[in-house]
Image (cartoon, rainbow, N blue to C red; front, side):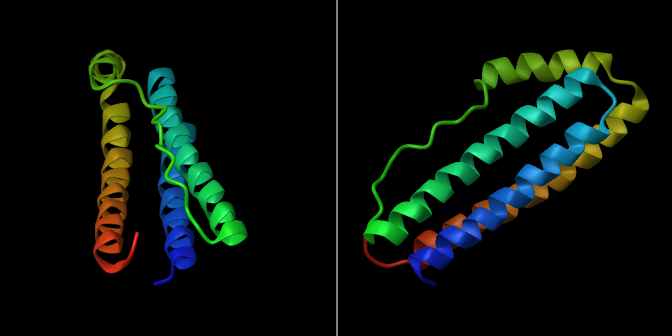
Length: 126
């Protein structure tokens, strides 16, 4: 796999997860759940934007400058508070919908992580 193909494939993974979170945000009726899923969708969009920028640099210069990727997701402590707050306000039906959406997202996150691990093993050079 070339660098260009690797970045383009990574972009596809990030788009898929972004869209899963975005769909969950639109489908949940709970305002806190909507905000939570939108935050995750926005974070995935930032990954996509980062990769788009890296691809542009690669196509123009043939090199990749390493720029740290910053997360837009709050700290684990803040997320735990948010999850606890949301959980207390969800109806049983909302909880089922939330679990289903999170299950899909987790599957995609695991697939994406495996893609990145495989990519690191397979790409040669710096």
